[in-house]
Length: 166
Image 1 (cartoon, rainbow, N blue to C red):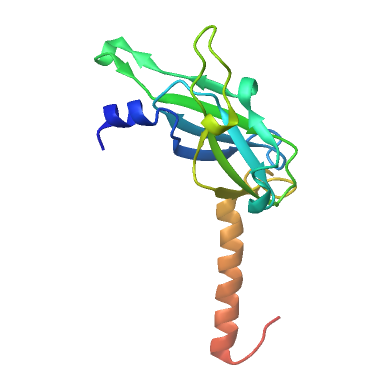
Image 2 (image 1 turned 180 degrees about the vertical axis):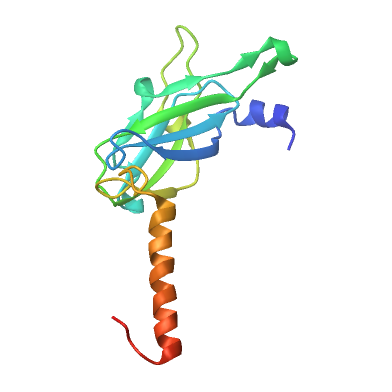
């Protein structure tokens, strides 16, 4: 795709969507994406897909948008990067979301209208369970896997002998 055509025709079309836990991990989630244009940062999210149009909106002035430039490497300019923190999530609960916004108004220009917003397709994520992941609780993932593998090996040995050593 020709980037210059896409920039001119749809500067706020979201791409490169990513979610990652915030702090505290079980009740927050960072949603990040890129756009070719300087656009507002909005996330619509809800526990049911059909509620997205009327559910909470996060972002707006609270969302962050920036661009990375580096003249040292041939005048590199990144796309605009957007980050919005969703809060008050239910631990282990699944949420539907879409990201987007509209072109940032020029000084003295009119504010973004709802009909001007451009959004991604609907996606979903599941908030981390209460207490976080085993890694966040200080448990070793390898140790947990080893314990399961050890239990399986003992079960296999018992089955081979036709007995039950438990």
